[in-house]
Length: 234
Image (cartoon, rainbow, N blue to C red; front, side):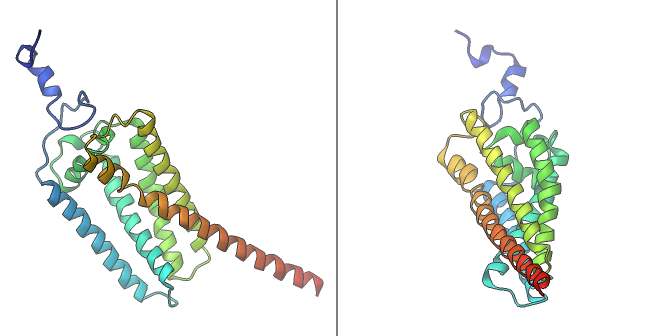
């Protein structure tokens, strides 16, 4: 029976990483320079900073905003930052991400415990994240602007952004499910804490905002139709 000692050095190096599946090909992997707490703290600080900027922009809004609209502005601004900066970074650096020594590379290495596809240049993940960074990120900014400026673009942009987010997240989670979650560390912290809980907001909130958008667009079209009918009658 062969042992690890009997295996070639190259074969042993192939599995010197903490990700799943255990035979994932990561020859350029290097450990993160920041701990898990430091990485999560960095992400939390960035989200908080975006929220503070959002609150400042809300104070400059064209008209007073409802509690719901304030929440949507903060949500869209946080999404824009995550989509454009964090996911954009992944899209440009996916092929070397496992070996980079930067704060954002450390964040992706930490999250990759829940999905190692981020470190292996998985085609679906690269394409999905590229589209998310450019498309979802841009429309999230347009949605926030629409609310702050009291612009009619608000609900169409909100609908487009939310549909794209929901569609992308469902595909992303479903593809891992269809492969038996083979890319996810089975430890409950990584499976439920990272893979499920960190993605759940992009299922629940976009679903709510899609319904909200459809209701308001329908209401606006109904008012426009009635106004047109009144003019024709007169």
